[in-house]
Structure formats: structure tokens, C-alpha cells
Image 1: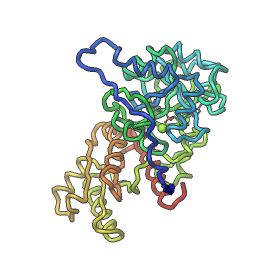
Image 2: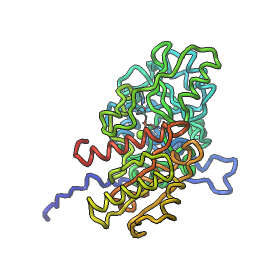
Image 3: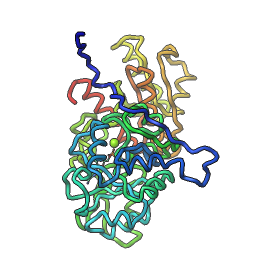
Image 4: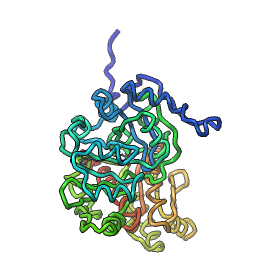
Length: 393
Ligand code: TXA
Ligand code: MG
């Protein structure tokens, strides 16, 4: 029989059935339902688990075999280091060769929570975790199931976000299955991730300095306040990210190795609505829709992740609107410092992919509170999608 050559490189290889582990009402106060995931980790397998930022793909921190699996399963470049997840400060400090006072101050202020600290690495940490760097990323997550999983396993867990490299990070257990079904034995169900974007990363590995490598739920203002309250004369240096320029080169942060890669992107090109005034933003939405209709097929399917107030003005106003089956709309309230925008962004991207959208339009947010992290991911996703369109990544 002739062998058919197939181009299935985008298809998951199915080696096993992935089981979703979830607590039933009988399990209140008991963690035995999570035991299969703990046993799998101890067998040096990798499992999906919830955190308050995004779902993680966990592996025993010292198992070369499990760590190599993480890279293989995600299709992750080898030079992109992993964060170690801990359940206590003591566990964290055992993984660092130097623990600066700023690290202790920030851990006391924000752990458990969405903050990763980069410190000089202890020599016990395998090179698969650090990607050969002399530093290590440490985070104590807040989600009770993440903490429980680490406690039950009794060791730190190395974990990147549980998505295929380049895709939006998963914020629900179904999103993990969408990317990794058949590639991992278990996903622990823990509800929708409260934050919805990955942790803030601060590099404390240079004495007396603090550098922001990735914005997240803990803002630079939060960090500076905590350092100042403790009497430390250290201010967090922000990188020179330029949110207005959407090509990959402009949003690269050389200090965070992972940032040079294509990130967070849905399949369709993304347009960002920059106007913050709701009435003007509704006009901007109309102009963009007309441009899309003029330049592409009028039957293009359009995904919109827009502010509720903008959408209301557009939907109720005398605007030219697409047929409802050409439009996939997700809207979010704009009045909570970007919390709802951050919470819904990646879920919306995945929804638009499933709905086969050809173009995506997304509202900008002011860059305070969660807005800074939201605009950072949005800029990267838009840049990555634009570059992919030009065949550059
Ligand atoms: O919220 C989060 O941080 C999630 C959840 C699962 O905890 N994890 C996460 O992991 O976002 P990942 O692997 O998708 O992103 C980790 C980022 C990468 O950009 C990586 O380059 C950077 O952290 N990183 C890790 N270790 C580093 C180090 N030693 N120095 C600089 N950057 C580091
Ligand atoms: Mg990631």
C-alpha cells in the first residue's frame, strides 16, 4: 500500500487520553481526587493545573525527563527558561543562591499572588529550568489548588503556561484540552483564572536594582510602594516597551528570553481601537468596519472584543452594521481598572479562533491597574499576528 504523505504538523499527536480531574461535592476538605495528578508528577509526567493567572503545565523541577517533555509538548524553544512554582517563601529561598532584601519584602507583600521574582539560581537547579542562565524565576501562586498540588507533591513545580507555544495562554481547563488533549495524562479543573494574564516578572538579580520584565496584575506602582514602605531605596525600572508600535522588534524585551518569541496570538489579524472616549470609539469602530468591507470580502467574519459602553453606543446608534452571523462580539465593562478586560482577552481570542474569525478588533484601555498588562499582551498579539501575516515569524 502506498504511503500517503500528510501535512499534519499542526495536528496534536494523540498518545493518550487526557483526563479532567475535578472535585465532586463529596470531596470537600479532601484532596484525594487530585492524587492521580500527584502520582503522575512523581512518575515524571507533566500535568495541567490552575493558577490565578493562567493554567500551568507542571513538571517536577528536578526531573530532566519531565522538563524535556514540557518543551516537546508545547513546542517551546529550548532557550526559554521556566518559572519554578513554590508553596512557601522557605521553599523559594532554597532555590536561590542570593536572597536580596527586596525579594523578601516583595514576597511578603504579594505572595501568594501573580508575581514572579528573578533571583540568582542555586546550583541545584537543572539547566532545562534556567535555559543555561545564572538566574531562576520563582513564584508562589494564589490558587488554592495550585498550592495544594505543590504541597502534595512536596517539591517545587516547573511550569510554563499550558498552551502550545505562541497561542494565547489558557484561562480555563477546556483551553488546556483544546491545545494539549492527548498529550498529557491529566488537567486539574479549577475554574476560570481570576486574573487571566500571566504574572508580573521582576528581575532582582542585579544588586540594588529591580527591572520589570513583564507587566501583570501587580503593577510597578504596587511594587514601588511596597519597597518604599520597607525603607528600601529601590525603584522598579520599566522597560522601554512602546505600546504604539506593533511590530515584533518594537515589543521585544531582550532581558526576558521568552519575550522575543511570537506570543499570545489568535489566527486572525488584530486591529486595536485606540480611542478612549466612548462616542469617538464608536465612530472609530464604524470607520474600521467600512475599511474591512472595502478591502476584503464583505462576508468576512469579524470578532470584536470591545468595551461595553462603546458597543452600546454602536449597537443602539444609526451605524451601518454587519449581518449578525458575520459578527462575533464579546464585550467587557470598562470601569474597573482593566480587570475585566484582562480577564477576558485570551478567552476571547480563543473564542474568535473557534468561530473562524477573519479579522479581530479590540478596544484599548488606559494603562493603569491591569490596563498596562492588558495593553502589553494586546500589542504583542497584534504584532505577532501582523508579522505572521507578512510571513516574518
Ligand atoms: O503567571 C505565570 O507566570 C504563568 C503561570 C502558569 O504561573 N506562567 C508563565 O510561564 O507565564 P511562561 O513560561 O509561559 O512564561 C515565563 C516567562 C518567559 O517569558 C520566560 O522567558 C521568563 O518568564 N523567564 C523565566 N525564567 C527567567 C529568567 N531566569 N530570566 C528571565 N526571564 C525568565
Ligand atoms: Mg507562556
